[in-house]
Length: 254
Image (tube, rainbow, N blue to C red; front, side):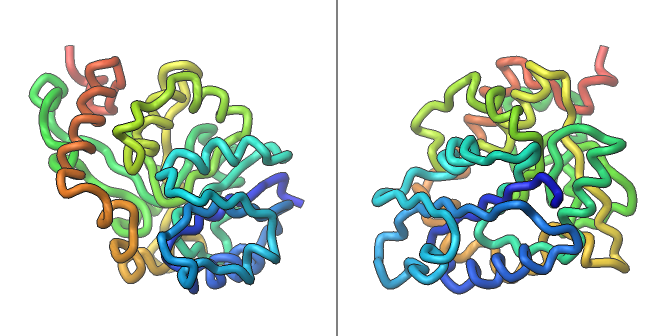
């Protein structure tokens, strides 16, 4: 097998869980285990009980946000872990793509990421939502691309979870920030970078997300979070920057 455990994430996209599981089972390289973290969606009719009976599941009767699945992933027994957002359906060669990329670019991998593009001093208190280029399924890259942070499907070595949890998040960031945090922690403690494996436009089977533009947004923790969610994400971004998170563009700043 591939020495990979997949962690799925349940919330309100009940039917998408079935599609995700099928996509995982159809990978060109088989995975060792599939586990499910389930945040209670507020309505039992939105819970996919069938899939919970089929694969190992941890069910929270409250919504613990986006961070808890990274704690659940500590139960994996494989070298690698791949965590999926609930709107992320991978192509059949995604796991293979990640394993191949790890051989040449050992670091945090994902199906989407961003690289910031303005000088660091001006960006210290700027908006998280501005001044970056995306790469991955929604902005294809033919070659491996270094980015500042990653998202939607994270592929990494299980041992790196100890670094993820070395600094604990403020509870006010329950529904955001895990993506930036992981990239920053690996940079700070292990000197590892974040990368997007190749997402060639002519081979979607290598992509980590095939239907992100269709499934993203609706029923997400993001859209159903507090009205000032954008402000909260900006605060988190700037906290990480002020704490020492180095962006790629910083390397060119004297």
